[in-house]
Amino acid sequence: AMNDEDVVYPADDQSFKDFKSMVEEEVGWEICYNKKNVCVSTRNQANSNVKLLKAVTSFSDVSAATLFDVVHDTEYRRKWDHDMIEMKEICKLCVNNTVSYYAVKCPTPVKSRDVLFLCSWIAYPSMRDPKEYLMINKSVSHSDYPPRNNMVRAISLVTGYLIRPTGPNSAEFLYLTHFDPRGSLPKWVVNKVAEFFTPKVIHRIHKAAKKYGAWKNKHSANFKPWLWPEQCRLPTAKPGKLSARVEKVEIIDETALSEDSAANGRDPEEISDDEDATT
Image (tube, rainbow, N blue to C red; front, top):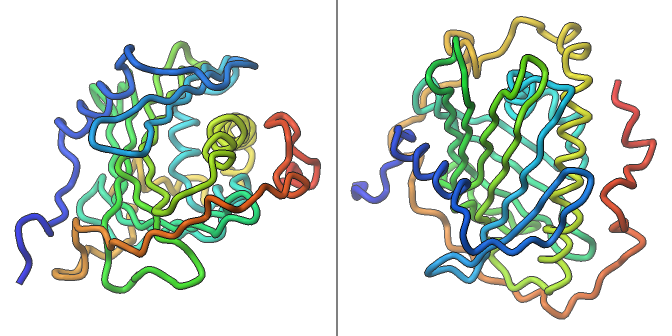
């Protein structure tokens, strides 16, 4: 029998409100990267040894609607998310709450991480007249997707985006994550994620958004289940398979690993050309 704390509930207005107030909280942030219009900062979070990380930027050449499509479109993600190993949408709880699996490469030689999460999204005041889009992910577990032994099952306490149109083709873009890698990582990895990987992902999303229209026209142009729920082909979550409890995997200690800087790159702007050949 499942206990109440095992039940996975869809996000409600309060969940989105809580996320928004975390993102908009002004106090306690420490800036660790601030250039090319991307500002990344971290802050300590009560009862957690893992810091919150936030990235704030604005784009003058892509619309909020396109950015919202890009963070949702799993098919397109394979084109621009070059650290992704695998992503799979598994099932839905309801129209705007789905469960997915995502695996990502970490800076060499740190072990890859994977997460299983509930993704919830909404537009306020409505999808037809959006003044802001929100998307939040948090870890859950699914009995068909136990932790794998070649990866560390990480925990997303909360990860999400807040996207606001500032004009017909411009937007404010905020990203926040409270992500527990389930392991003691060397300090250089933590810094690398803040000062290198996060800005790099922001640049990639921006580039990807600029190319999305052309790509989408050739790839099921009208298929956007995140906007049109009746298009969603995911099965409904089966009773007993999902749990709000996250698997507590053994904490691994990788603090002694030193960086392979040749493999990890130096500057987030330095995105190689082979990566750029998105067809």
